[in-house]
Length: 559
Image (cartoon, one colour):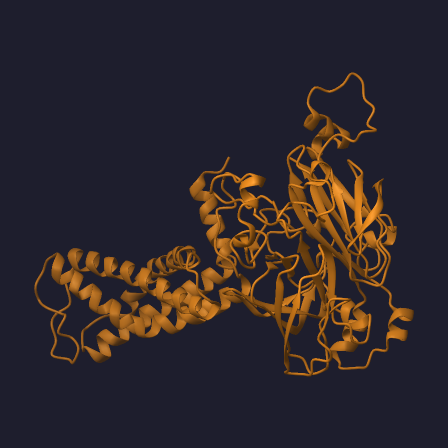
């Protein structure tokens, strides 16, 4: 087992955007510091010195610069500030740590070797011919302050590069921690705080307003340790108060490496800023019955778009550059699809879709107030949004070509099938899809809110247990059926209940004394209680025209 400091170092490197940016940026800082100091001492202060001799300190300064970056990011990530302010604090923290380290280097150098001789040059009053610790410290601080002239701009540019790659604070997710449950989703957050029971979480009520379902109140970026270590993970945020959405464009990389142009959403909410983001699906917007929902939607593109929740709110046309403010009472409890309803279904399928989640007004953990809590109270809840991608039509949108809905539905050939914007192995591991892979303990049922934003019919099928279909398009089922698979037509939403227990029709003899162990054996001991979910429309399990199983698949796991 790796030691804690090894894990922290690995996590720090991950949060800095990978090892390569750290090496490059620290090298730039070290080189700038060395060149500036040597030029300042010789050209400004008129001191003697060898450029070749100064190069001997380059490896040390490089190492100190890299360490400053790795130490600074965890510190600034704890600050509750916006993105622009965080960039400034990144630069200040990096330069402060590197400056202190440079003072130490100068002090050691002066104590081991002769200190620099005093000079009459302007600004050189901190140099004296005295020997000892205090003159050396004064020399070090003087040189360090002067060096900030070049260090701060470089550190600021480095922060911009890193923040574009990663958007969340360094967590101790790699370390053994006590799990906590989010007060809305009921999911384990990985926090080191004490474990909250469901009853305790419910006491938060409206005060439990949070900006994200996992982690620290914003978009969480995680990295995997193994096969997917190179790919940062954008967790779909859950937003509630003061939500602003931005209709954006950009490129997403598919499971086979193919870049595809897409439309998507940026957002702002209670200090969480991803205005230039490209999230498809968009963030989950959640509220309680009867509360007032306030949204601002800005169209940053050069064509008309809209924001529509059928039967709830319709923005009308949002022209290029226009911002529309929407206010409406939260509808009845359930799961709703929000979408760009112009040119249906084109704009929706090209990425402009997401989910509105409405919880019961009584703050109970059930999908609808008419459901009996004794049977249908859930421990955690999840949103699964399905979609398909035909890169040919995405390329037409990128070229500003008109896409007629009739041609779109007739000629659409899906090459990628997504669940929460991911596919295949990237959707089937908790490291790369922490908002999708369901993971909990025995007897902790999960509510899964399914939304089909695409134009194909899907049929999600769960291994390991059946599910109960509670509602379709916010309407409770007259008879709650126990299903092996659930049909999802285009535009449909369904809430299903996944029991984390032994299926009632399981036949085994002699009875296993441990239910969790039995469920593990049901799928195979190597998987340790991990069961797949895949679409029974078989072609949707592929990607890029044949890669299997790299399509609409994920997992659920009993811990």
